[in-house]
Structure formats: C-alpha cells, structure tokens
Length: 76
Picture 1 (cartoon, rainbow, N blue to C red):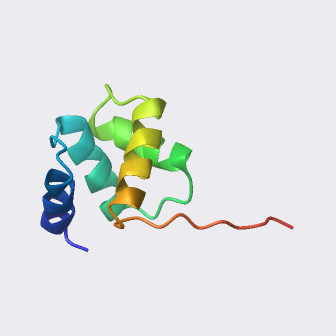
Picture 2: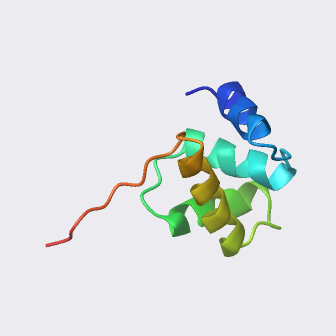
C-alpha cells in the first residue's frame, strides 16, 4: 500500500498525521522490520523524539486501519 493511501486511511479515522506518525510510516514502508523494537530503532534515526509506546500505539492503529498485519511465529 502506498504512503498516501495509508495517510488517507488514518485521516479517515480522525487521526492527525504528526511528524512521528510520518516517520513511523516511512520506517515501516522502507525497512523489513520483524519486531516493534526494530521499527523503533529504525524510526529514531528519522525522529529521535519517538518513544517505544508511540511505536506500539501506531502499530495498533495501523492494524485497526487494516494497513498492517501482525505475524506470529514460533522459534524452535
């Protein structure tokens, strides 16, 4: 999904598109991240004001918007 489509969905949910949200969207689209921590470490390179709680909230919002799907895996 394109960045503009994601932003339109979030706006449709009544959310403001903050600099932190933009940085997280960019990070998720540009990097192959397998965990919240990976998203966080990549995102703080773009915006050092992003906190881990912001990452968790944004992941939840993106799941609710049906933009992001969480994958569960079992490590052997």
